[in-house]
Length: 346
Image 1 (cartoon, rainbow, N blue to C red):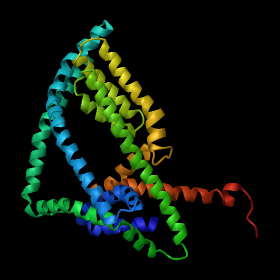
Image 2 (image 1 turned 90 degrees about the horizontal axis):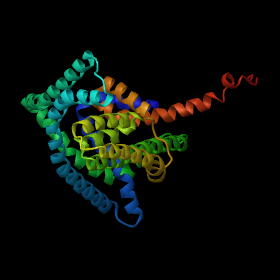
Image 3 (image 1 turned 180 degrees about the vertical axis):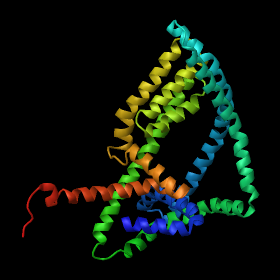
Image 4 (image 1 turned 90 degrees about the vertical axis):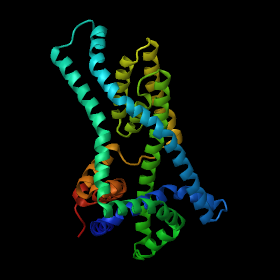
């Protein structure tokens, strides 16, 4: 398994330009394969099953994009004003709540941070436009990237249609003596990886809806953005919730309409955490533990530094493989005389 990883990264270093669309297509095939396999078990031809899943996924994605783009565009337009107001209004309201003045250094730093955040958000759009213009100026690179992104759905469709045949071809290349063991190890990798992907996406999506809906009911500024940050930030335990609560408190101070808003914000996060612990994870996601958030963050940082964007795409599956490898190594180490302290037989 480690040798296979080394071979993959060696090939990526040679064919780096082709890697991104192929990896994206393979990721799509891997994610949707269980749905197509389920339809196939119910008697539907795999080609038709692939078509149904592909069309349904495309329509769902297009609908979500058409709905979310205007929402996030409107929310993003409020960001400069949000940070500008925060820099000038939050500190006085905190002082009024505490009944005493904050140090001048705190007031000065808060104003500077709010103004810098506002300026950063305002400059993000023009900066992105300049980057896109300079990228488009290189015609060959722009056409290659556009062609690569266009071909991703086509590749994903054929990969999904031929998924059993592709996995069968790889399995046929394995040494006959070790095929059962290697297949079992990669089945463990699949369980770890699928548990992580399914778990994090499901928990993040459900919590984002809960937080965004609750904060919108409380008429908190930037409710949808805060909800998405808090929901998907839950990949790192306590970080997403902590950041969401902090941003919600800032939004609460800027949109204060009465004490009832405090109860709504507190109730939103309490209900979200209770549902995550009692319903979403045990009943919807299941008890399987995929990858710890810390392992994922370290893998993304490490492989992103070594291999760039391709390394980021491969970070999660590589982390799943390394988890299985490390578990096997530890199991075998604990059976050695070095660990047990028993003398080896002559």
